[in-house]
Each structure stands twice: as structure tokens, then as C-alpha cells.
Image (tube, rainbow, N blue to C red; front, side, top):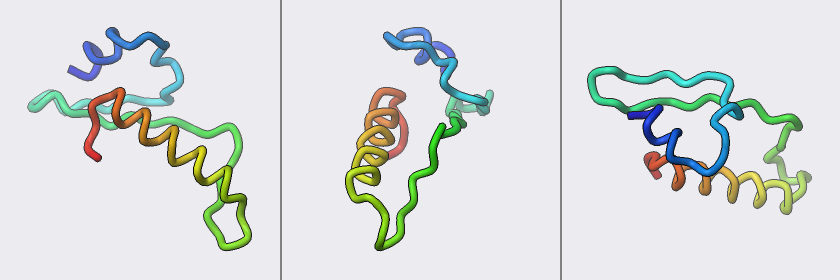
Length: 67
């Protein structure tokens, strides 16, 4: 299932470092690595945090993940 979802995407799944699929139910974990860290402290950039959160939500939606 994970690979079939990925094959239907308009972008490459090469962004993921690893894909771990449960063969029993077709669910999977997609592992990716950020090029730059995003910190979530009180002195961190709010815009960077919001951008990270937006990308995470978009990936979750696109991959039909648990929200």
C-alpha cells in the first residue's frame, strides 16, 4: 500500500530516507531528514516553526497519514 500511494504522487518519494511498511495491514512509517534543524524554543523563529508544521501537515495529508 505504501508504495502504491507513493507511485500516485506527483513528486518523487526519494525525499524519504526510509520507508517501513507493516505487511499485515499496509500501514507505514516514512522517515525523512531535514537539511536544517527547526527548533521549538521560546526564542526560535515562529515563521520557521509555522513552515515546518505546514509541510508536516501537507505530507501527512498527501500520504493519507494519521492526523
